[in-house]
Structure formats: structure tokens, C-alpha cells
Image (cartoon, rainbow, N blue to C red; front, side, top):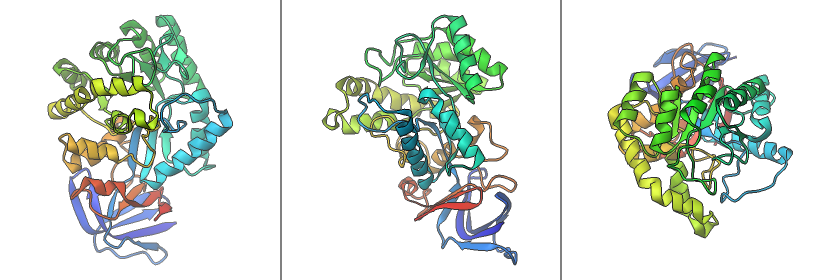
Length: 391
């Protein structure tokens, strides 16, 4: 099928320019031509975007599609109900312009089943990569749904289990966190040797690794162990930034996650221990983000969607927070497109509106380069050349 999308302001995230009154020709889900003024093939479907702004389909590199984004209190729910909820969350992501996600942990390998359904075309959902169960120390952050492991050999086995189940990424827990009672964000958890064992197993299998890491000692343990991506990163110094740049380690800050906890607070039913931890760390988190950006660390967009009141239609609020903390709108957009594609190793096929790449687009009423809040008003999502959402 051939489709011509015309009359759009196309944001070129590679050249950092805008193609005004631009056109994109798509054939069988692949971009065939990008520019202005070319004629429509006789057999093409024509979609007139009426001067709206077209971006590459957006990425969210840290979601928990099985979670409810409620008040953070523990719940008992069946796998069937969890799967139904995940399907709704995936649809919500699509409807907000998100066409690619990395899931950061799900119970009972539900993420793998949903990924396989997406690949087969059995469900309409963002493209995705998955991590199965996080690997944590006994009683550590994420232990309720993760794979508890102690010692390098057990961590190695735990990584092999996730790879066997179908994980694209291995997630390891280098520190405590906000949402687990009885642990602190700054405390190191899995040791450097334990982290290295799991990371080595992933790399042997051609998989990449990411770490929940908020305190500096745990972050440094993970970096020395060879991790590919630091998630959250509340406390980092110049040594961390220099190491990350030298070894091509990404930073996925998830600024939105603590923002929503602080915004809603205990009045909305969020446990007081979560609110306390956020209040103690949120300013350091924002400061670290600003310094990492200034230092030139590679940053990709992820929200930790599914944490308290961190909704699946608010991926782009992360970009708003990035701009509020020092990025330009173009830099924030690149975090959610071309940078994210590099992190997920799909730059050859995704992340920009470029000839030969997959026709994944997000269309907005107004230009987010003028006001980043425009990203919160998606009017159309195109997945593989097919319109899957239109307001």
C-alpha cells in the first residue's frame, strides 16, 4: 500500500530543522521519499495533515506496561487481569504518539507474551523490547515481582533465566529505590561482582543491560561492571559522566516519576514512605540531570510509566520536565526519538523521518519547538504507515 502524507511541518531530528509544507511518501510501511512539492503516485492514498507538525514516532524507554499508575499501594490481581490492563496501557501509549517502548519489568513473563503478540500482529501496540523480571538481591528493591539472587553465580543464573524466557534486556538493581518499603534510594544493593556476572551473561547473548540505580556508590558499581544504561540516576558526579561518555553509557533520568509522587503526595493515598524518599531526593535528581546534560552524557527519554500517577498518556511530560531543567525543545525531542533509537539499537530503522526507515510518526496540532507542551496534544499516530490513532 502507498500513502502520501502531505502538508505537514516535518521535524528533522537529524538535521535539527523543520521541513515546512512537507510530504512523506510511504510504501508498504517504509518511508520512500521526504521533501516538498513532489507529486502523488496515482494509486496512493493521500492524507492531508493540514499544517500540523509531524515527528518520528516517539519512544518511551522505561515503562511498566503491567502496572496501574495508581497510588502505589500493593494489590493482588490475576495474570489475566494484569494482561487486560497492559493491553489498555499499550493502546494509551499509542494514542499519545508513542510507537516504541522498552518495558522495564513485568510479572510472570507477561511482557514476553505481549511482545510476541505484537510481533505477530495479533494486537495493535507499540513496538517493544522487554526485560522480564528484574534481578535484585534478596529483599532488595523490586523483590516483590523480581528474581531475587545472591552472589555472582546466582546472578549469572538469574540472567540466563530471563534470556531463556525471551528478554531483550537484562535489568539489574544496583541500589534501593522509592517504591520498596524498607530500602533507601542511596543504598547500594547488588555488588559490583554480582552486577558484572549478570551483565556478562547478557552481553554474551547479544543483549543489553540497564540498571535501576539512584545512589552514587551503586551507580559506580554498575558502570564498572559494564552496564549499558543508568536509570533514574539521582546522584552522579563528574567521574560518572566522564565514564559514561567514554563507554557510551546512556542516562534515562525518568524525571516524571518523582514529579508525580511529589505532586499528588499522601493526600492521594501514596504511602508516606514513598513521598518522604522523593522529597529527600528530587532536587538532587534534577541537579544531576542538568549537570549530565551540560557534560554531554547521552540521554534518552523514559518516564517509569506505571509508578504512582505516572500515566501512560503522559510520556511527553518527561520532555516538558527536560526543557524546564535546561534542554532546548529540539534536544528533548531528540531524547525521545533518535537518541532513544540508538539506545535500543534500532537507529538503522527507527528514530527519524528518513528514507528507508519505518513509517512510524506522531502528529501534533502545534509545533513543540515553539512550546514543548504541544507534545501533550497528539492528533494522529502512524505505525508502519497505518493510521492507528486519529483524534
